[in-house]
Structures are given as structure tokens and as C-alpha cells.
Length: 270
Length: 311
Image (cartoon, rainbow over all chains, first blue to last red; front, side, top):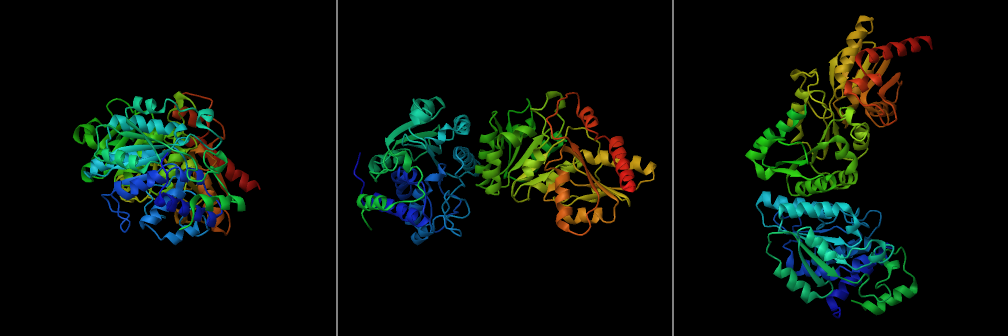
């Protein structure tokens, strides 16, 4: 596992900042996707923070909407909305809810939170890009627990049938869902073979290795003949030893003093 | 009515590049002409309603206007969460065309009869629910649907249904149509029950009871003014629907009358009982079993008027 650099630590501090101010959140699910998000938003996605509705943009859908603290952190850091707004997370009049909503948060491409919806929406966007004759690429970030949902596999079959090479399913494979290990709750293996058998061009990568993620997504930047699945091997709660691989950090409604101290030690300060 | 509806999708798509058709494993040859003429905008997907709704939502998020078609039960029950979140929460212009609303699929049993579809679609914020009364009205609705904001659920009847709508009345989503004036009773129907309400009004006239008939083709948003005007000074208001009483047209009309304040008119709701149908046969046979044919509607009205007089 590579060492987390300052940018990865900074984005994690933003996640924890929002969570502390909101008094709750899904830290484990957000921390496992930080490197995936930063690689996409820093160098892969053709998006315009000052023009979030630019029609020709690439789309990134966070289908595992409960990981939104990670998405909010990168969107704020990229300038889609002020970083200070993270302090309003889950407040009554905030735009930043416990799951991301289209039309409220600049840069959010779909309202997610009910699991298993994002890949179908992404498929529709990929087909629309074909109809509209744009070269938009669509990335959909799925949780490993999320792909228990049958609708994901309906979407996978259809995406394969349509040969949408501009669609990439990214699986955050942290091996922990809400109750416990995926291999106990709902075994997924052989996961790569599953996607392959549904007609996807499958790749596997260390989901915290910024260099490898960058190379892979760059290599895949031109659409192929088939939809792609990128299985990112990740660690739930990555970056905070207390939270790593700890199912009780899937969702937290409050942080005690010792947990806050552990966060400070792990992440440092800006 | 279904044929008219789908042909209209094709016709509208000729004039509007944003329109696509998405079916869920429909019958062989459906909309073949559209498929031949504009294959890139014709999608025949598998038996996967959840995916189809999400896919339509994704298209709509990129400026496409999808018309989605399958059997009414499957396009409402199976993918309810996708309709609620992907379409209604995001308020997207996706049109759901539900074949065989109500008791049309009587011989196929309760798995195929959509008797609560209006209720569950009506419960969703941002959803528009339209139940055209005949093929002519379907044509008017389809024209109006293109520019309508947000999702629409279109309940389609059997086909070959009696035409009672009139071109001269025009058509506007959310605005009911007074098809017959009357002083004593207001009959409010939706879909194919409008024709039966008109039949009941004819029978009532023979008994000296003057009944107005209101075509409530749009159940949501409900036409508040149309209901209040039609019910004013009536001895009895009767709603007639091919749907369970819970949450359907009668509920919507009751909501309006209760919220309006003033004197509540006497209201009777004629509907399907709160039970899954146990019989097969035909749509007409089941409507008769449930007391929803014209002579039965008229008899129910006369019974209620007699009851009211005795009270």
C-alpha cells in the first residue's frame, strides 16, 4: 500500500471537517474512494467547476451516494462550491445532505442514496451521448455492497448489449458492507469474472495508488468497444487506523474525544 | 388506444429529435415502422423495468425525452423506487405508458391487473397521472405530453373503446372536460369509465334524474376548479373508476372537496373493492362483477338518492 500524500490527507481532513460539523456521516465509505475521486477530478474528467452544466462534460455519478462526504470534499476542493460550505453538512438548510442531490449541489450528476440506481442512469447518459453526438465519457462509482442489487446487473447486461464504450463502472471493493465482510453478508467472488461474463472489459487496480489509478484511467480515456469495469481494491476507512476495515465506521452519528484525537493524529492539520 | 399511443410516439419523434422510444420486451413487431425509420431512437430492452427507468432518467438528464412502454403493473410496481427517485425526485420528462390499466388483463389474473396504479403514481411528488378516455383523447394527450415538464404516467385502456371525447372540447393536461350538463347529480369518471358514466346518465335521464358528466382524464394534478364547479348545488356526487377506492380518482375528488371547505356534498365512490381480483373472464365481465357498468352505476345513483331522501 502506498503512503498517502499531502493531497490525500487534505481531502480526508475535509471529509472529517464536514462530518464533525454535521455530527454524522459515512466516513468509512467516503475514505475508501478519496484516491479514485481525486484522480478522476484532478486529471481525467473534462468538467468545468465554474460551468457545472456544460453540456459536453464528462459525467461522474457517485452511485454509492452514502460516500458523499468524499464527493463533497473533492467538489469543494476543485471549486464547484466554497470549501466553507462543508461546515453546513446535514444542517437543516444546507445543500449538502447525507446523500447527494441533483440540482442542489453543483457537480452532482444524479440524486443517489437508494442503491443500485447509478449504473442504469449512467447507461442512459452514455446512450444519450451517442444520440447527441458528443464524446462525453460516463463514470459510475459503485459500492461493493451496492452491487448486491439486481438492478446493477440488469444495467450491466444492457450496457453490454449496447456496447457503450464510453461507460466505466468503478467498483469500490473495500470488502466491507454495513453489517460486515462482503464475503459473509453476500459473497461477490469471482467478481472480475462476473463483470467479464456480463461483457465488460475488466481491470483491477489498487484503489489508493494514485499513480496506478492515473495510468489506468489515462490508458482507458478513449472509449473502447465494450463498457468497462474497474475494480478498485480499497480499504474502508483508509487513512484512519481506528476506522480501517472496521464495520462500525460505516456510519457514525457522533465522534467521541478519543476518536477525534485519533483522527488528528492520523491526518494532521492543514 | 395503445396502437394510437405508440403511433403517436413515432409521429412525434419525426418532428422532435429529442424523442426516443423504450420498450420492455414488447410483442413482436411493435412500432416496426419507427424502428425502420429511426433505429437509433428505438430501444427494445429486456425484461428489466428497473434498468429501463434508470436508463430513461439518464437520457432525460442529457436532454432526451423518452417514452417508455410496458404492461401497467410492471411499469409501476416493479420499478417503483426508480420512478420515485430517478424520475420524480429529479423531476425528469420521462413518459411512462402503461398498457392494460385496470381490468384489461382480466383473463391473466391478479399479477397482470393494475388496480392500484393510479394510487401509487399519484402519491409521488412531481408525477402527472393521465388516463385518457378513448383513442381520440390519447392523440390529444400525446401531443400535449411533449412539452409537459416532469414525469407523466399514462394509463392505457384495452383498445377499441367507445369514443366519447370531442375535438371541440380541446385538451389540456390537468383540466377536466364537462361532457354533459345536469342539475341533480355529478358523475365524475376517468379513462374508459367516462363512457360508462355517460351511459349511466342516459339511463338516469329516463328516470327523471339529471346527471352531469365530468371527464377527469388527469387525476394528478387534479382539476380543483372543475370539481368544485361541477359539484356545486348537486344532490349527489359520484366518482366512477376502474381502480380500487384507496387512493384513486374518488380519493382525489374527496381530497378536493374536503380541502375546499364549505358544505360537503353527498359523495359516493364507485370503485373496485380492496381485494385482489379472484376472477378471470373479460374486462367487461369484471366491471359487471364490481357493479361498474352503466345500468349498475345508474342503479347505485338511484339507490343513493332514495337513501338521501329517506334520511
